[in-house]
Amino acid sequence: MNPFVFVFLDGFGLGDPAPSNPLFTSGITVIEEIAGKKLIKGIDVSRPEVLIKGIDATLGVDGLPQSATGQTALFTGKNAPETLGFHLPAFPDKKLIELIRMHNILKKLDNAGYRPTFANAYTDSYFERAKLRRNMHSVTTHCMLSAGLRLRKEKDLMENNAVYWDIVREHLHINYNPQVTPIDPFCAGEHLAHISRSHEFVLFECFATDLTGHSCDNHKAEKILATLDSFFSGILKAKTCSTNLLICSDHGNIEDLRVKTHTTNLVPLIVIGPDAHHFYSVERIDQVTPQILTLFGL
Image (cartoon, rainbow, N blue to C red; front, top):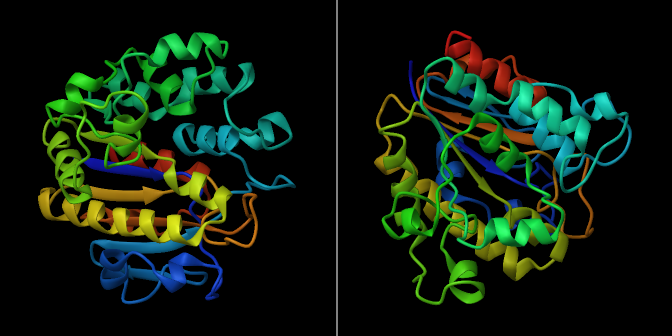
């Protein structure tokens, strides 16, 4: 089976070709060169080893899509907003945690004998701080905990065997560990690709895009898009020919800096690799994980 590197970008949608959309005014050059066009509404690229299209994140439930339900749907293949009857922000509740424990992609792949992993590095103090907020964990953390997989820590990061959520380690350097030196995003991309050499499925989460969208700050948006451009370039250069790079999101946000909220825009599904054509029929975020599992024979 061909390996997957799944880059989850929180709050990353397909917006209008407008001045308020940094994906139109600035963009991500390396993806645009592959696509031959901007990452905006209406994009539909399908050719050998490349698929780029918009897919639905609302899942038939009224209101703005949110992180807890969107991520649960994305990583379990279950319609989490429909289960609750509404879109839930931030951290998953008991019902969603049960869905995650039963159906998340990391656990299913691990149970089937594959080697899945979450590439994000946790700070050494993460669980101490989590207790102060009543053990509220992200969907991805619940995926890891329920699968019983090893969490990567700062030591792994220093050995270039993990990637920090902001890609360049700047947030960690400023807020938690000044001894951690920020790195070039291209190198972070290479590190992520190298992790996939020993795992069939690698998941990485970046929520800087969602934070930037909420800030409505165009300068910050240009900065994170430039970071992603270099990051994806590093992944594409270092990954093997058989490895699939898959990029997707849970809801829109950064593509419309006129509003601080999420959007109902379609989110991009980007697959670059030998299995790209298998994802053409995917139309919603809760169909991504089932298609990946199908390719793994599950």
